[in-house]
Length: 193
Image 1 (tube, rainbow, N blue to C red):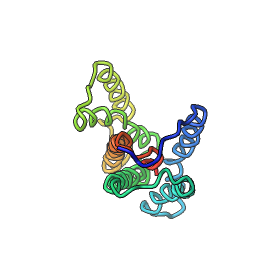
Image 2 (image 1 turned 90 degrees about the vertical axis):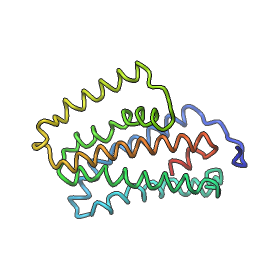
Image 3 (image 1 turned 45 degrees about the horizontal axis):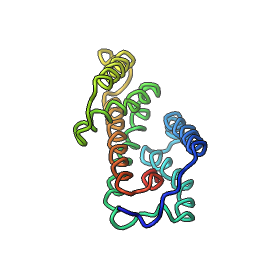
């Protein structure tokens, strides 16, 4: 399946630089959410802030390059990605706003690799090897030790904990759908947008 333009190779240095910049922005999510909530912004406004910042950065690149435009056959996949990303974004701030410590929210949200492995097995029939199962076990055991579900009353509202877990699951679904879109000719830059 062709998108009408040949893909140009991306240098390793440029790829690492883009990942580094994205990590810097991504690392400000939870503390930024706390700050914006303290300034009186609603959960909805806070979740839109990240999307607005991403659009501000990526939209000129998409318009100028012309390579990352969405063609008609990809509208449904992009709409699904947008909906999943919107739920994930709302969930990632809900825990913080409900008083769950930032470290716990971040841990639960970034349990995303666990959910990705499990959902990939269910949705894509990807193998769940012994090494993956061992890694998942270590990750889950670490989460249990850090979150201490037997003492959940001391870390905040259960709905905040559930929202953080749901956010991680939605992020996994976003990654899985994004991967499938990229495999089927949708550019990774478009998926990220």
